[in-house]
Image (cartoon, rainbow, N blue to C red; front, top):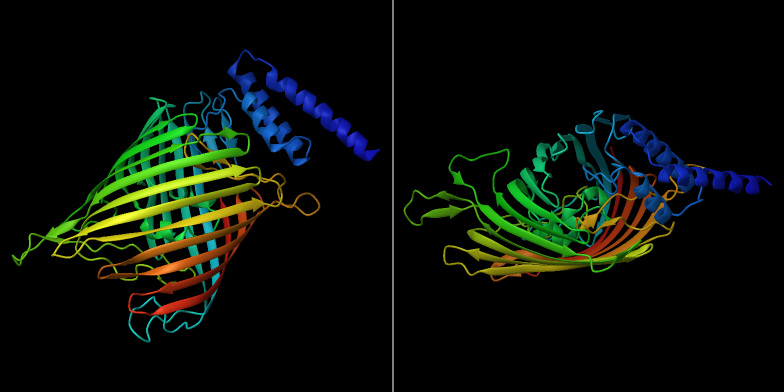
Length: 476
């Protein structure tokens, strides 16, 4: 009788919610009330298992006064019309809906244990008997704090600092004009466009670190201007980037880059999607004028580095040595992803053509990764075709003893990265990762990675073995 009464009450709630969703109101105040009530009811129905995630999303979209309108790209901006103050994921919205302020941040706490054939003679250093690495370690991988908001309903802004490696780094300080919808113009400290994982927040990553090939050859953050076009199932970006950052060397002329990315989702229906994308960039390296008269310019060294798959043990197995005399770099990149229900697979390939000065030969470096994941608890990844990336995952039921398990995801990845060419010995590595992710709720996750790697240098030095890595992370 108890289960029958529960179903009956849930049906009444669902009927009331549907009526509320379809009701038309005459004022913004009544609109806001119905939206708030509707979302609370839908949350209850979803948590009780009365409706599915797809039904939840469809009903929620119909309930918002501006369907699909997500100004801050934070996956939780349902409607934008009234005064609204929240404590969890704190934000304040003005009464007329034209101004918004929100705090944001994250913390990653990592630990790892290393089991190599020889921890004291690794490819982290090309010299015999060098490259000693710790057996285990812990690190505060990332601690970010920032704020973002909306001005006049026309401009988005963000300012965010990352406390990492005993440094403070700016990771997003920009102004974006969105009134030209579907065009958007962004200026400030931004990401140079490239790839599916790079253009998704690290909070959405399946593994502790990005695939080694992507991690080694990805661009960085810098001052730049980006023009973006968002369609319903495609995205185009073009950017002009400088080499400027917080630090400045008075004698160095900073470089610049042109970059572009195009993505398309040929098929999207519910939790089924396909994704294709290409990217290319051309970067001119920074330099200082020489005073010895031998050559006109002294180009800055270029670092293309990746580690073991965790930063808790600082083994630099690719790119331990910087590349000297780099004039410019041309990057080519391709990406693809597919998802159906709880299963997804994605892959990215990268090649860099590096042109060098001082009569050195040009070199070509590259690599790729392939990964797959499956949610044991029935969730699916939140693919966003209009942005060409992934958004936050919402468990079907948040973790709570006697109530829900959270979301549990199994994942595997293989990556190959090859940074050996001509006289440059940046190393070569095969990298296997098995991951287990436990999403306690939207903001909190536990991640466990088992990594097996096989790395070598051009001089014949080789490192093989395993790494166990753990992360506890939360965002707000």
